[in-house]
Image (tube, rainbow, N blue to C red):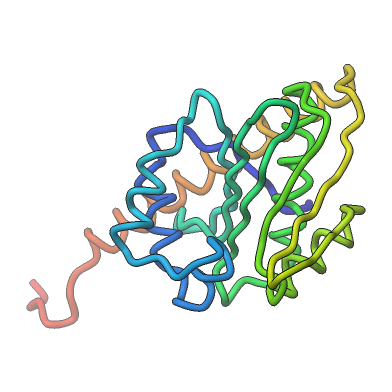
Length: 195
């Protein structure tokens, strides 16, 4: 099975903030185009309008976000920002997030998907080109554009199916994580006397 991408709810804003705060300084600069401190990142996460925008994530077995994408709707286009934790790059997470955001943007009815990044962000530019985006770079910054096909029954069904499978996966991971925590809490400590 491929990488499962789940649309996050507003209740998961703290998990998104923790993910973004876990990015190193250079990764923060590449993700946001400037080096943001913790307070600025927290304000960014707090300012996301989950009724207007969409946020997607990939979680590990302990429910930590390994990668996240923020898709912001604008008039006629949607802008995408992607982040993947350093130890999890090169596994297809960024590409899977881009594909899921692409599908969601189509279903919104916008005509173009847009990404803005620093020209030195080779990973993001490689990802954009790999997914057919037109990249224009100038003055140390780059813009990537992708024209979107109109939504159809397949795109709507694909988004619903992807979300349902990802929710099922998340429920299983949640149950497993809870069982592990309970087992750890109930296990006798090595120093406890035996009866």
